[in-house]
Every structure is written in C-alpha cells, then in structure tokens.
Image 1: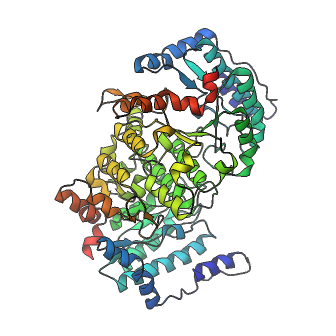
Image 2: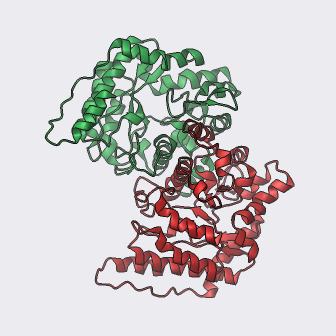
Image 3: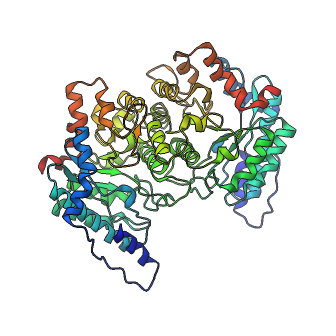
Length: 319
Length: 319
C-alpha cells in the first residue's frame, strides 16, 4: 500500500522521473498476512491449493501511464512469486499484466513470458477494460488482441477475464463493474469467431459468468437468432465459469445450466463479500458449502474441484 | 424508419436547421404492424393489456443533440398515443424522454408532463446512460436527477430504467448493455439514500433485474458489509423486477429470490429474442408459460399478472 500510494502521489508532479522503486515487504510480513486470511480460510473451508494472483481491484490499469502500470505490475507479480515460494504446497501463481489504456496488448507479452517461463506462473488475468469503467478498448474479439492470444496459445496458459477498480462513478467496482464485464465478454464471444481462430484459447469468466447463467435462455435465443453456434458448443473447450456466486439458489442455477466440464471451483477468498450470511451462519463466499449440497457424481465433483482446473491450467500439473 | 433515417442524415450537414418534420404513418399502417405482431402475440399467449412504450433500442439518445432527441421523442410518443387511441382495450402508454448526453434531466420534465397530463400516459422510461454505452451521466442516485424524481413523485408515475442502443463496440445492445444497466442501477440504489429522499419513487428494473437475482447473496453480503439496509427492505416499495427472463430455471430463480410483491409480469414482446426454443417448442419470450409452471397461490398470481402493475402504475386504474 505504501509503495502504491507513493507511486500514485509521484504522478502528480510532472518533474518526477518515474522509477520502479522497491517494495519493502519482508517474508515475515507475507506470512503474517496470509496466516490470518487465505491460509486460515483454506484450512477452515477444506481447500488445498489456491491459484493466487495479484488482487484484481488493485491492478488499477487506468492509473498513470504504461510505465506506472509496468512497475506496479512487476512488483505485484514478484510478490505473488514470493508467496508461492514460501508456500509451494498452498499457492500457485497467476500474473497481472502491465496493461494501460490505449497501449497495445502486445506490450504485455514480455511480462507474461517472464512470469510463465522464469517464475513458473500458470496463467494470467486479462483486463478487457484497462480504462477502469470507460470501456475504451476494443472488444476482446478484435484482432488487436490477437498477438497476445498467440502467445497464450504458444505458452498454453489461460486467462481469467477480469476488470480492475472502476473510476467511473456509475459502476461500483465489485458490485456492478465486475459482473458487467463478465456478461460483456460472454456476449462478445457469441458474436465473433475468436475460437475458430484460436481453437485452444481458454478463458475463465469469473463470478459464475456474471448474468449469463440466469439469462441462458436469452443468450441461447440470441445465438440462434444471429445464426451463431449453440452456446454449449461455443464454450466447450474455450470458456469456463467459476463458482463465485454467494448463495445456494445461484449455485444451483449455475450447475443446472452450465455443463459440469465448464465449471471451476472458485471463491474470491478474500474478496468482494467478507461477512457471514445470517441465514446460514456461514461466510457468504464459502462456496464449497453450496457445491457440497448439490447432487454430483464423484467424478463430476472431482472435475469441479480439481480436474477442470488441471485441464484449463495444464501447467498446474507440470509444477 | 424513413423519418429517423432522414433526421439522422440531416445531422451530417451543419447548414441544416433542424426541423421537427412530419411522421407519415397512417392508421392503417399502425393497425397492420400491430395485428401481425403485438396483437397477435397478446391473443396467442393470453395476455390482455400491454403497457406500451417506444422501442427502447430506438430511443437513441446519443444521436445528434437535444433538439434531435426532442423531435424524435415527441414523434415516438405521439405515435404511441395513436396506438393506444386505436386499441384502448389492448394498450396503455408509457413515454420515452428527450434525454441527451450532458443535458440536464430537468429538460425532460415538460415532455413527461405533456404525456401524462395531456395524453394519458402512466409512466416513462428513464435512460441511465444517454451516451449509449459510454456511461458519462451521473449515477441515478446523484442529486442531478432529483428535479425529475420530484416531478415523477408529484405525478405519481414510475420509471422503467432502460438504456437504449449501444454505440460502444464493447457492448451488444440487447445482449450486454441492457443487462449491465439493470445490474448497475441496482448497485447504485444499494449505496445511496435515494428512497429515503423519495419514499414513493418507483422504478422497474427490466430483464428480471439483470444479474441481480443470480447474485442475490453477493448483493445481500455487500449491503451488509456496507452497513446498508437489507435488500428486501430497500426494494419493498421502490424497486420492481419484470419477468423478461427467457428460460424456466431463470424464472424459477427469480421467484425464489425476489418477493412476489416486487415482480411484474413482462416480456419484451416483440424484443430481443424472437425465435422458438427448440427444447420447448415455444417462443423464448413467451414468459407466461414459465410463470404458469411455478406453484403460486391465486392471490400471488394475480399480483404478478395484474395487482403489482396497478400498484406500481396507479394511473393504470384511473384510465
């Protein structure tokens, strides 16, 4: 926090030459932070390995310029690397990218390569709106994104599609901007041939797919009206939803609608909703409890909790 | 179409003085258009009265300037008035507003008054994003909207919150822009005291509330974390969802989550999804069929199909 605050403060003085600076966090500070949160919740809730990325809301691609974003991103990814070195049994790393509004996505390739090839990361978070709620980038299906998809394909890593904080007062970051981005990306996929061009490209849409499963009939009908492939076929090898939906009826709907092969266990732990649901007595985001209540075969359960993640993030099995 | 096309074409020549012009549509043309669509579907699907507004996607508030929007809006509302005069048993009118990016909402008051007081309209559609996908207006909870809310309160008319076409290539108009706007508005309401300031203000959020029912746990948890009122309490007299959700599991979720007093029967008829669902053999947007399959008491059924609409649109009962 202190680093980011001073980095942002320095942006206000144009005479400052941006320097990468140093992130002063000791191993003990990392341990202390995790023991009271992610590790505690892993133990309490019964999960083992967490795919760990820099906090999405903290990416802040809209702040400053490309250099600001690059310095911040390298520090964040290095910190995630240290976390995973300290707790190799508990965490596997995914990186943020040095995106910046108006800057070609190709400029993020070197950081993806550094993280995957040098630091052992297994995927990345890709921000469809680096402007933070002004949506000035091209749709994810635009050819401007293709150089990055080529690299993802070559490295065989997936991307979670995830926006960062909103600087548009219309959008609450975790309440609407996140969910809208999920819905937006899915509809973009329906209308283009991205997965014909990249048959092995894989995206995870978080928050249970935004509004998509609830409006599955709408999307099926629109795909049909637009003479696009059926949704099940469109998503099969390319689009996956996580289980970050914080009540039983929502999770029930997700599993009723989305093929089990396309669902990855997830929870924004620690994330958007931190409280305990008074109607259940459990944390809203303790998503394993909801899934445990669904009638799934042992095989399907293994897919959701492990197998699908190994399929989508193949480097997970090579660590 | 011809009127709007020539109005838009005229915008390209700055030497043109904008004139309101004339909409050349005969009563027979109106009858012909409706008989093959809305009236046919009313009969086939078993609904009686439709609350009818100008097509939301056609409002196009981002096109031209305030004068463009005003001329177009007056024509659209006049046309709706004629429809309801021709078929007073079948249609009741709701108006669009002459909104335009950057123009104070107070400038829309006179058209609301004209429609309600002179033409017998019972409500309006309010666009939270007149920019068409750039989201440059203040949030709906901002005091800049208050003069309009005062007039709505005085006239005792509700507003459906509905965006128009998207001119941002990221957002498919009916596939993501509509749904995102619903989700966005709901989250705005959670974070502000709008309904303390206007206890009788009433909004309908279309498309079954966007992503909201699917993520009800998320929104309950966020309201709790933010020390805001519980959602049921927040929406009780002020926020209503329609049933424009085009598959059985989605409608099931809506009725499981949202109090029946806050659900109004609706279908975008004729709207975003026009095809027949091959899995059911019925139109995706024939929403009555889904609701008929839900176990509701006779009283609750009456609320959803009629009573709630009379409560939210009190002028409906005064016609």
